[in-house]
Length: 272
Image 1 (cartoon, rainbow, N blue to C red):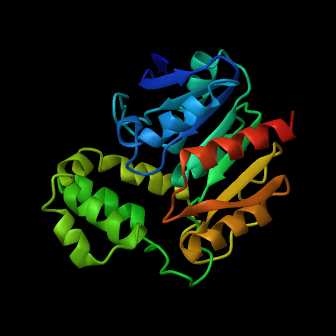
Image 2: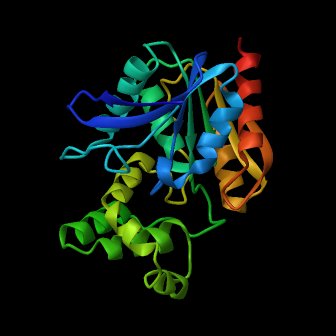
């Protein structure tokens, strides 16, 4: 295992951990997550390190990575490009994204970042009324709360409007030991919101969304996940001509390191 730092195009330091020495796999976390909060990434990496170099990094503004204002989705795409170039030696990688990290992976592939293939797990896409769509002004409300010095309100909006928790549950969470940690990275929730673009408003995906992606894409969802996440995964797979849909064991927007490692290994070997 190796701990390192890549320097993005705007000078931001992006901290990462790498395991193994083979063909690169890069893991991107979803909203509010980073290396210290996702031990399952390290567990999956250890299972894959016999054949692959697995890199998990803290997205900007989280964990040990820096942040540079103003934010734009393009900056996070540059962060990923820096990881590929500096942590993976410029070799084309398989890029895997959890949840909204999958949107970042797809946005980067669409934006021309050189990679071999993309895999995503349950990108939070809302294409019908199987759940309430996100508010049309979701990102604007997040950023207004942050600008007013109310990070807790931004986290609460994320937990209710995005995650779908009842307000009374979130009220209890605000009194818990975990809340200060969430407030500390509340500004990054709007980063994920911007990466989601217009995929969460209860409408069919635009035909031109990600239409420059020509590499293989694997879209996974848990067999026992929330129905809207399965529907969203199906919509993404149907949209992309190079995509394959793969239901895997999992529930509650998650799967195990063993399942993830096996799915990624199979996906890479199928295209070898």
